[in-house]
Length: 153
Image (cartoon, rainbow, N blue to C red; front, side, top):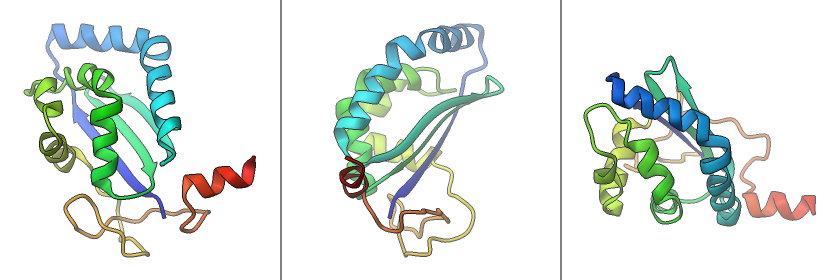
């Protein structure tokens, strides 16, 4: 069964950070998206992932993935450090480099900004802290990306 990540990060509202946000939006499809696509595809654990901005106030990363949350967080840190360093540089009141300095720092960051889905996991899945996950529907039951992909080839 896939796990959900609903990372909602407050974006600084100062002029400098908002200019960085405009630059990110303009460069995303050519600069960041190919790196993310490759890392996610190579990982063989990401079902879906997307990044969006709400009202220039929140940067949102939503993903569904297989396996332990800690492994997923470490994938971010190892494979996409440069991408997430840029994304996290816009955090209101925090420095992006601090988040990527080590596995514990990023895990703590995810714990702080991950928004739990409403409801409760029907399969007993837990989040990075060991708390019961929120509700996540999956049409594929407990099948992993690798199992689904192999059936499609």
